[in-house]
Image 1 (tube, rainbow, N blue to C red):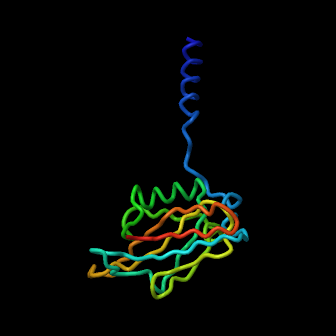
Image 2: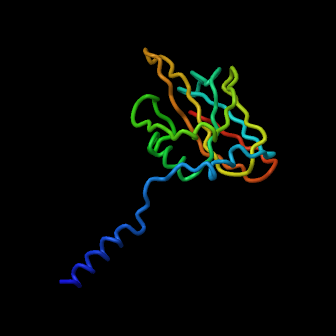
Length: 162
């Protein structure tokens, strides 16, 4: 009987091994987004239909987030397998209190262009919202891409939307 109890306990513990819990936000892991570097991320955010641009993120902001395990899990929760979605639909978990401290923001110009300068090497998510044309009610399409700044001084180009 005691052997059975030990076996059951061992099986229960082994089921826990290798089953990761949810990723936890870490300011230390996220801090590189604020580090001074010599890299640059330049991009454009727009929606196109039939090969023509029908909307841009003009007047809005682009956000640069570090691609940590927490942020990767958050992006999967928010977007699933897509890289765009109508905002306000689906899950939108509340971020932790320090989340907003570990991001960079760039203004988007009238043509949907944006630029992050002084970026340190690393993996990032670039995110913005684009107003959906002709949707009747105002809707925003959230779009993102992951980018890697490979080395100091590198310029990376990114297109958000499609």
